[in-house]
Amino acid sequence: MPDEGKEVERRHELIIVGAGPAGLTAGLYAARGELDALLLESGLPGGQLLLTDLIDDYPGVEEVGGPELADRMLKHATKFGLEVETATVNAIKKLEDGDFRVTTDEGTVFRARAIVLTAGGTATKLGVPGEDEFAGKGVSYCALCDGAFFKGETIAVAGGGDAATEEGDFLTRFAEKVYMIHRRDEFRAQKIFQHRVFENPKMEVIWDTVVEEVLGDSGMERLRLKNVKTGDERFLDATGLFVFIGFRPNTGLMEDHVDHDEAGYFITDRDMRTSIPGLFVAGDVRSQMTRQITTAVGDATTAVITAEKYLKELAEPAHETAKT
Ligand code: NAP
Image (cartoon, rainbow, N blue to C red; front, side, top):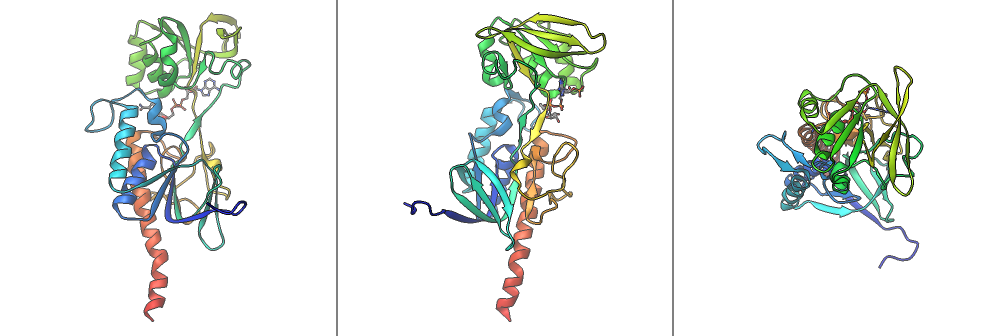
């Protein structure tokens, strides 16, 4: 038992933060490369995979459920000896001696020579009245988690990207009717997802429209909508609202400044180095054009290989000194 009030500090060569596809891939490569690596994850390993019903764009795996792929990735990484620990990282700071200090809600403090940050992000909220009040009582950000609660009901989906269209289509397994509410007159989603919406008889798109308010009593009952072109308002009876309007990267964990783009995503070079030596990133925290599982795992592979090179370079001067 540690002394009360005395900080427990643990040291590793490499700490990977987050166990989504990027983190689990980083973990696999780190363990397989026999690095002294630890992966920290606050919840269940899998990240966004746990929120995705069916994956049909992972090469070599024609169709797989998101949670199953997460489980397979975890097993694959731990097979190589990856150490995974449940801990909620709340801050990462680079110290003057070059180490990173990783603090957690649980109170354990870690030190590492290098970090691979794959902490993903959190769903963006609409920020309209009633959204928080009816969260869990109709308003949801996860189709896989909550879709089954809406069997035979009429629901709405806000957004027009890949997530909104893909998850909206998925929700028709349960709901009788799914209205897609999109603020423009065309989707930004990939064509394959758009086709699924247009061809699904249970789906109807309400273009040029935003949700202004979520209304109800003990649970959500209707939405107040506004046409952004005409200014007209209307009410839509719906017992559920699934919000898929984007994603905020969990980059706030870094206490030091890291070069980032306008949306806050960390900028890396092609080898996943950030502006802080020793900090490598992959997955949804990284500034990039695409956010696919395939790109996340590819970038995580590069991140670990670059981190390994960095660690070797750190070790070399000491080695040289020892020889003389
Ligand atoms: P996204 O591509 O950024 O789309 C967000 C959507 O929400 C856009 O249609 C946007 O409208 C709309 N929106 C944003 N703010 C809004 C607001 N305040 N009110 C109303 N609508 C708002 O986000 P995403 O769909 O979550 O996808 C994120 C990334 O994950 C993307 O790179 C995507 O390709 C990837 N992803 C891939 C898959 C897959 O391949 N299976 C599945 C899910 C996600 P505008 O179009 O008008 O900007």
